[in-house]
Length: 123
Image (cartoon, rainbow, N blue to C red; front, side, top):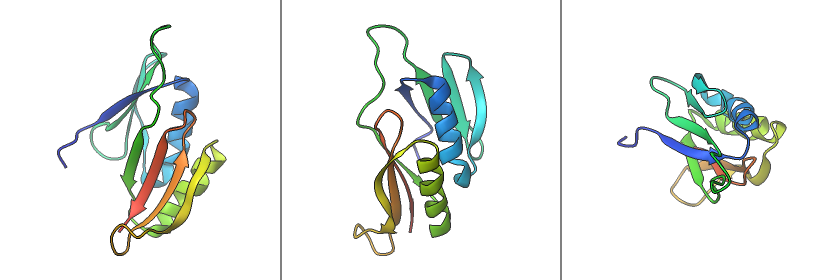
């Protein structure tokens, strides 16, 4: 994969960090690096590939409308993500199930604390 990492701005760095650590735990995500009140880097393996940035001032705002898709190792991981994300405060945006994108595509979707669409899929 060519993409190395993504960073987006969240309304509450502390709450978003808690949310993403809980929601992505089934994928093996953990905190890798943090500068309190500024940025948090999360990773599943190797280098951190998901960065959460804090709102920097009155002219800055949280990222809206982002769609992030993560690959899960199995359908069970997709299901575990969905349940963990809902428990962590996400809103349902598509329960786990087969999608008609390509044969065998199984995915779940939630809206994070700022309304971004987070997906975990397995083929």
